[in-house]
Length: 240
Image (tube, rainbow, N blue to C red; front, side):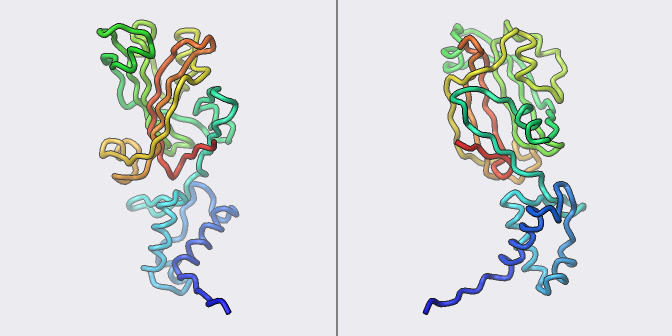
């Protein structure tokens, strides 16, 4: 006869709250009951409730906000790598999911082209690039840190344009007439948030992240831009 294994109380509470989120009892951006109330509801200690909440936060279902409480996250964005090497921008993905895409500019400047960038764009050793860094959001929630590199001469007008809450893919096409349409090469790695990244994205230091390094081509298969993006692992996933 198989031995019966009891499920720890914190695990039962965790699964119950997760079911409440998935069923819509607790809606995205809604504040869940505080720990004392949950402790009373489940007739367990606050330590038990706290462990359940902490695991749900680490899995991306909840977010604790200092002095405000614990809130339900918006559903994780699921981006499919389908259709070969065709490109779908973040703004387009958000709109398909009924989310409002947003962007906040962190940095933009002129930088020297590194060796791999020179090779991809076909530039000389003393060539310059435009570097744009933004925090991308969905319904106001930070999702990833966007880093784009483009040839300076063709895209220098980006230095003076308003790049808040716009699609960079659409803006690139507007400036040059040729936007990202295909992918020459891409890699996905697992990394952890640095101090600077954690501050920009409002996540803990060392939070698991997905680093996507992509070399984009335009519709004529010419080099267009390079994207080096850092996605919050608990809020974004790629389906192969």
